[in-house]
Length: 104
Image 1 (cartoon, rainbow, N blue to C red):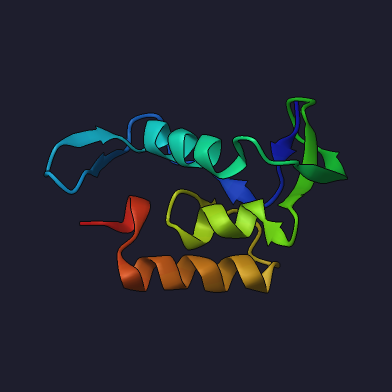
Image 2 (tube, helix red, strand yellow):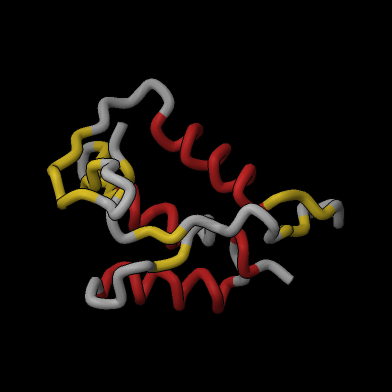
């Protein structure tokens, strides 16, 4: 098990509105998006340290796709590492486009 470095997942109590207006837990939508993103694909991770709870952190990719950046770009996670310009810019783009957790 590797936790993707640089991401902050939605809190368990945060809700998101689906296109049909139904409010659902954002974290379950984020998990579903991640599952669809990686399903059937080879994922490669470089170790990026260890989280406070002892879980290894990794910078993970599917080919050329950075998983953290893709999750943030689609609005299903926030940039936890403000020192990573690509994640910060991806979050700003998702907010502007009202994607994922940023949908009103």
